[in-house]
Image 1 (cartoon, helix red, strand yellow):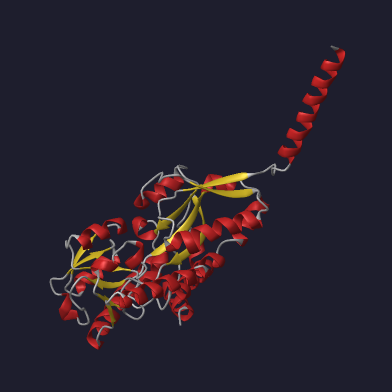
Image 2 (image 1 turned 180 degrees about the vertical axis):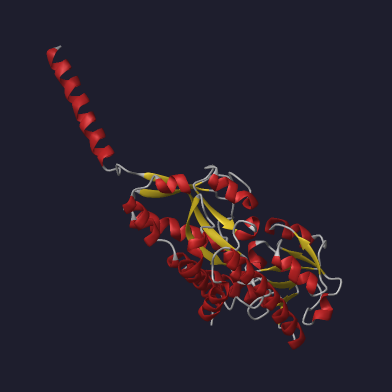
Length: 340
């Protein structure tokens, strides 16, 4: 009986030591960040922005900050600002067009002819944020850890080759809300604003004649069988800027060391990931050509019309930047110097 009790006690103590050993391997200040995961696994953001960022964060913090992906969307993409500020998720990828009144400065990356590549434009956007935009505090309530864009929006057409402004007259084109809608309307097109996840239905059913989207959409949204022509405008017709945001309270709950480590894995390093986005877009255009589609260029008149729209958009942006305490003219000139 005494031996049995001794054996039982020894086992309990051994288990306690083992448990304590296992627990000691977990950082005392461990933080888990939940990402609102609403994108398909092979979306460029997953492959080159969100996924690599999560791995870098875990590596830089030695595992004290880890990323967890929600098993389903905890909020729709247009509501990602509310999702992160209310703490429904700790991290979101926000398309800034859904907060047009609150977040205006990053739209400098969305003007016509301002996106020579996703990589150049993403890096220019982060540089402009650090040099000019940060002091405007447009992200109050959150922590910005990355700014970036996809490749520029170009026209993917179901049947008609669009190379001239006249080709857009009466042409129904799926657009994102905001500047993209304004530009297409100014070119005599008929914008049909919608979210990206509705584009397949719009194109496959013939509701629209074409779609204004980045070229990765040919594969990502299964548009390839419904597209015969892509008008690949140098510099793009418009673009959409995105922000990688962390909930403010979650950020403040991290140690200063953790914050510094997370930022080391963020910022310009996030922008660098856009090179993968460029490769996906280029591969999608090559796949379109192999499938029998054509990649075409706009004529001089089309480009002239876009230059005019770019000037209008830039002048409006400078006024808004000045109103936020930013030297809009200087900031715009700096951004342009970075995308050359």
